[in-house]
Image (cartoon, rainbow, N blue to C red; front, side, top):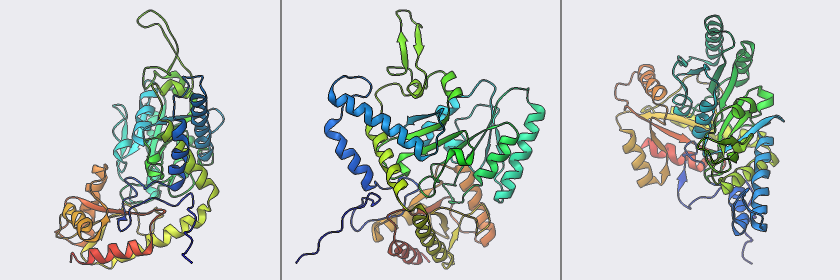
Length: 410
């Protein structure tokens, strides 16, 4: 009798047979849960909040249920808003637009561009720390100085990543949040790279805002979210002026009453399928054994890093100490080879997909390449790097195939 195919699991990921995807940090593959949720809803696809028909009512319910699911998954408080955006970059730009006048934002130079570029002039960018303890001390000192120098009552926002998209190193979110809270600052966390790997809870971490991307969380249907305190968001001008963001529009040019709540910043027809897909993955992860998934990933990550360390012509990039906690991301340079050429050869000859470049974190990646050259004594490292990243669909065979392929560039 023919073998009965195994039943698909919600967290199985889609892929192309024969292709090894080690580029999860850029865009994770689609989880079965997300694909199934979208396929189930597609026959009903209709307008959200804009129709009385059965299709529209079902889609509106699905959209608002998705909002509740995503909020619950990330530990949103009762008075928090969950605003659907395109991705983390969009979410942080929305927050930047919503900042009260005079807000000072404190970030680190080790951030992804999404957490460097949107903030207003006058923001403070702290140097890249050598370890997590230095990050905490630097933020403490900067906030203390701001409190002495700034006008009383002007808000301060500390914005930092949960995990680096260049090195995978985890940042001490809870410790940084405690420091910020002690100085009366609000906290925003870029959780794009952290959320796919470990549970993230606003309430437990005591942070004010969280930005996430669906396409990094196995729901590549164009949705992300900004989750957090409602007061700044309700007081700000709408991020997108248009239908759905209004409570009333009069005949006069500026006769507009804006909505209060998430709708205020979700003008236009929302991304229903993206929201539903993201919620489906949140549900699937809630039902999964996250500890077991994390342990499996850490074993693969250790295998990957050990394999790279055994290649004398390959140098890993890192910010913190070698044994710092990290998620499944490793960046490295191949001595004597242009990174784009290596990536192209890996794809053409070995069917392996990795990322090359500076990973939309140019200041950090360039700094780490310089440090890697100094640490290794190599003068032939290229000006850009390679990044291999793993996740739910990664296997030991994938890691071993990459290491074997990298060995051929010696």
